[in-house]
Length: 156
Ligand SMILES: [Cu+2]
Image (cartoon, rainbow, N blue to C red):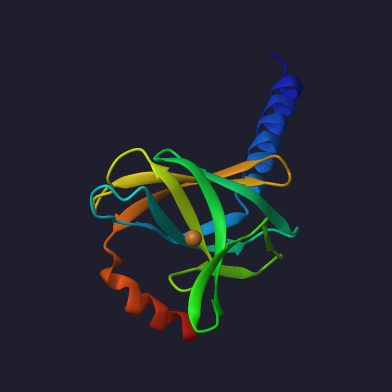
């Protein structure tokens, strides 16, 4: 095997690694799913997304291993009532940080396969307009954290 051939092979391996790296320019933080009492069909997932890449990332849909379907929702106050609305997608600009937190945007997990208990690990995947999929583990937590989480939203 010639040295040149090995050099070419190493170079191609590196370019594959670099390409794989680009897929992960979406960074996940504080990913969790709300624990639910028995017989609740739905739950909500929260996370912070940061775009570490140079290109805008468009999230077109989401999925989870514990739900039939996952929708992107936002919460809006209408006549003093908090209402959830379905979002068609979510764009994250380069360098932008988007928080999905209680009282705001969230992932709606519809049709839970089983009861979510605190400490469980579930998987959340986001499908991107580019055709790529970004997946992360989420921890199941109690909803008692909610007022706290809302509080933290306002100061960074
Ligand atoms: Cu919702």
